[in-house]
Image 1 (cartoon, rainbow, N blue to C red):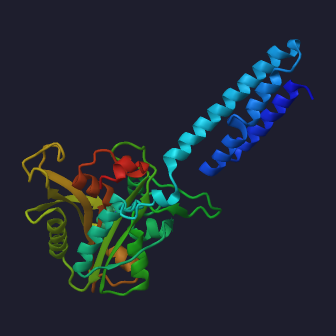
Image 2 (cartoon, helix red, strand yellow):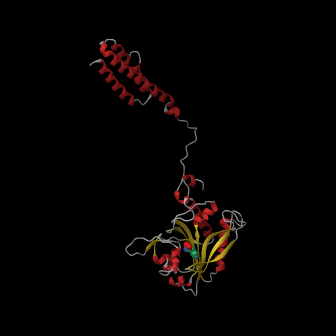
Image 3 (spheres, helix red, strand yellow):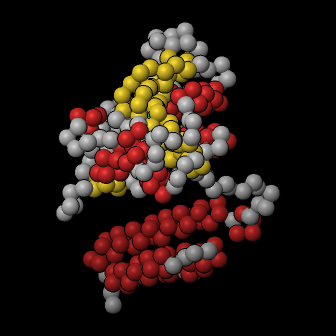
Length: 340
Ligand code: PHE
């Protein structure tokens, strides 16, 4: 083997042993084998003297580059090991631990929970219903006849099923129907949940949102009881100084129907950016359960009356926390979520 080939095979050996060095001790072995005066590289330098003149330049060049490589790698690894220390030196048992970051409930869930707690304290129990509903529970039993224009108030996602009767519920009111189907009065429930509407997405509306439905049915339930209950809710949620007002509205399943506003908790009713200068915030729809809905569900409207309400959660949370674009509630950007 000529010298050049010996140098090349030494290079292979050096390269492969460098890849296997995992400790300062192994690095020292490497140094003693290759880099000291009696090491492999110096032996090659000496052998270079005896090669024929014409082979010298090429072999010399090869050897210089190998020496530079081996020394460079040695230096690099030495620095790594010097900075590392042993596992024992590194272990400082007095250092505080690194906490695993824990998540927390989404602002919508927090808001739903808070509202649920307030109504639970007022004697309401919690009910749930399916998000995939049928036309009967979402519309028909609630006194939306087929082709009635009131259906257009709620742009519906229909499910492509063979029967053509399933849809994504557009409100939590079908839970009213399901509860009245299986329970006789007295009824006093709330139903928090997710609803879907096929609306153009904007800062104010999204295709998914959440509501809390309320339903009370019993003998002698009055509109003033509805007002008193919702006023109590508003004072607990928005602050003791809050005042509410009711404006006439329309829903097929309640009569009379109203929308409730609460005094703007930011300006206290003087008028500001959040309430658009009116001093009032619109927070829910409500009304007395329509007699037709009761009789659809075999509850005698001559004997029983009831009230119902539906609170929009996103709107409530946005007003309470000063969020001006509903879409950020669904983007799950941690920088946003961490703020609440
Ligand atoms: N379901 C109605 C809506 O989504 C709100 C509502 C609930 C109104 C209960 C009256 C009674 O718009």
